[in-house]
Image (cartoon, rainbow, N blue to C red; front, side, top):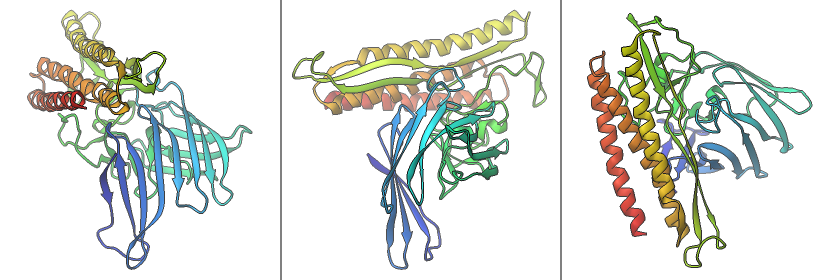
Length: 377
């Protein structure tokens, strides 16, 4: 675990707050320290620790309160129809939330709109304790109910910090108030400017992890126009999610290698369409799909190859990180580069090809470096 981000006001006064974020090897935030200026020093008021299943948060422990509390989150299928293909958007089933001053746990169930934005929280007795309404870009329009401030899940089923009002997508932070990301696209964005959310087309689109936005369903029809161009075909894809786990398994592993790395599956959603009767466009879009499929096979084969028994937990988790992050993003960015080359004649095509090439080369170098590090453990 490493401390990767500190957020503090430029001008400090009594009551000012500072946040310290800590992240794990996958880039997931695992801890948040809330400090408050008391006139002479920063005093820790609250510590939140986060546990995950893949990228879905399943547990949140809050300490430094008068009485520590724990919130639990249960997930089902998201908008992709899989467990995490859409980054959990629309997949949060229920939560066990605690509220001052009693801190008694209360179970709530979530409802969503068509884009996977949280709209209500309902107790088992049928009481609506949260009502949320957001603008198309996620800005809060309505936030009502006895648990409105306690519930952190809002726009795109993402966790929003109460102190900064920023939403956590996994790879980036998003400000719904100004409709932009707080940092550049880590995949090497091919759009200008580099900070728009869902390409400034939020209705009907989602961004699973803050890297690549995709369409929700198939809402476009052949002949639709966008930015003055007639759309003949399009292919979109979600960032691949590799599901693995490390556990102690002395029964199936030899005594000197009792830590077992198990690979379950890789999820990846690809959506493509074309104008019916235009064989050239159909073949073009199918080649885009083939490039994504090739990346999927490479990710799947690599993850399958590294599962097995390891001598230490650290070594098993190191190889899990290589498979889940560096292998997945290397092969995925290669597919994006190949697809950008196919579309290089389109507006912005050369910029896209350049940026995805740089992204592929960067992830490939990190992929090789991490493999060497794991081998040396």
